[in-house]
Length: 285
Image (cartoon, rainbow, N blue to C red; front, side, top):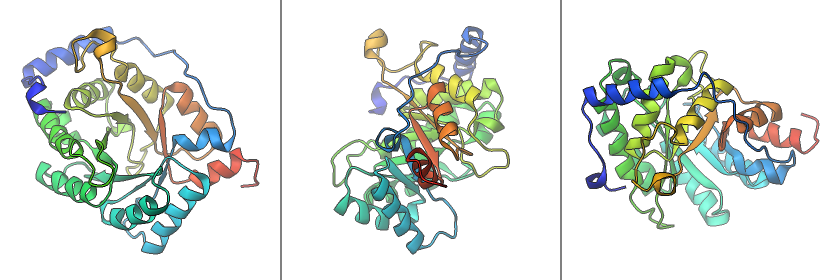
């Protein structure tokens, strides 16, 4: 993800790109995507088991990790301050379970320097994924360059090889789609993709009304698939990097999860991962 190979656009150029994308948008993305079988082994790889409360205790983080191991979930998603403990617990015993740290949570208005410091701490202490909140204030002001630079700075941290596994750290950009207009969602998505995001993520789940909606997931998937022609690589579809979609916020049941996957989500963020796994396993919840 070297910055030297990335194109640089002015705010005016970004505005033209976004306007052109809006003209190409369908009224809705009617595509349906395959859903997994409703069995624990098939559902577990979609779930980021999440605990983001400010007052989360060490024992709660230990429990979160134990639950992720018990159900073989994809990842735990936590605040940066808890990464060292979770990473030690999981990497020593269950290295297949990823550790995701939020960055700039939940407002996204922290300075870029603060986000970089938080991301750097998380990566150095074992985070394999970063879930970064974009700066929606800059986005609404149409300061697209500032939004891009903010994401790119964290992308550069995420691009550093992980100290244990020597791999790129995955970057997910949280857009808070329910708080944005359709045009702003398009703008944020295109900018995030161009800055090197691996995932477009719907929501923090912390703002009033913040939740994943099927229509938003469909839109993000349409954009992530490169339908507007903006992406890195000049080799057409074969040269375009695969960007994925994470749905989060208000996903509490197996039906919620399946609806999001059918709409195009590749990953599901939920604080009710255990409840979903018990439901899909036929247990009384």
